[in-house]
Length: 121
Length: 107
Image (tube, rainbow over all chains, first blue to last red; front, side, top):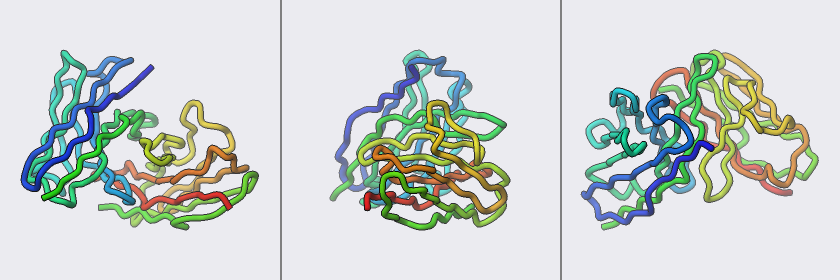
């Protein structure tokens, strides 16, 4: 079955960077884009960006432009999200989510299990 | 950015109740609207896409409707496993945005 498995929880200092991985299985990795969404405690999910896993082209939310980098390793069927210049407000659970398209519309399905990133000084 | 607003933010209901959650977009998004269910400590799960289409495996007690700016998620007969937080999400334009969520709790 389609599965996305993410790397484990991280604790980082303010100003540091974090890189989260998302390993896909159960489907052809390069046939579906991968998105990253984060959710701060008690908050709504927030879309960060996505990568075309076939050609590597990325698009980021303006909010994170300049701080986020999404990459992929097709040989490992894995996508990565790196966030730099971390601040306390970046404490959140970070999810990868596969893009689906039906009726020409985007859905996020399935999602990875989430990776908790805690930022403290 | 398109703002998504859900109401209510929380509700208490009993097993067997009919529950309705509303989602409003700040501009017309046609039918570019998805609904997700999230349980504590878990990732969101897609329930409804394109405003009214069922994701495979989702029980028929869930239904979605609406277009333009106003949308509704209905649970026809609430079951114990339905107690969760529900989010709407627009897929009309980037950045893709979510509602603030509706927490469905046991009365």
